Structures are given as C-alpha cells and as structure tokens.
Image 1 (spheres, rainbow, N blue to C red):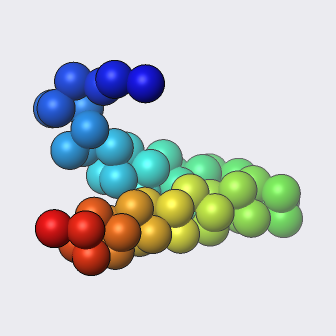
Image 2: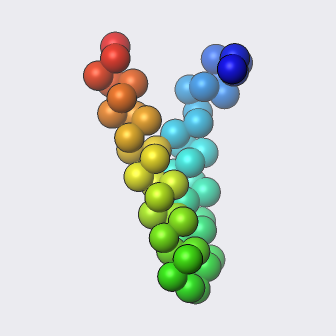
Amino acid sequence: MWLPEWLYKILPGIYATVGLLTIYNMENSIGTASGCLLVCTAILVLVIRKDAS
C-alpha cells in the first residue's frame, strides 16, 4: 500500500491524538482500552521508524 509522504509522516500523531481524544471522551472501559491501544500504536510506530533509520 502506498501513502503520500506527508500522510506517512503524520500518522503517529494522528494515532496519538485520536487515542487521547478517545480516552478523554469515552467514559467506559472499552473506550479507554481503545484509546490506550491507539496511543501505544503511535509509540510503537515511532520506535520502529527510529530503529529503522
């Protein structure tokens, strides 16, 4: 799958932002868990990109 470079660079930020918004706005455990998974995904993507470069 090909993504434009600008989108590829900002994806971790999008994941983290949506994850934090989900944690903040959802008041149940499923919403909190989903938000935590998105934030963890953003961190994981950043770590993998750092190790690859």
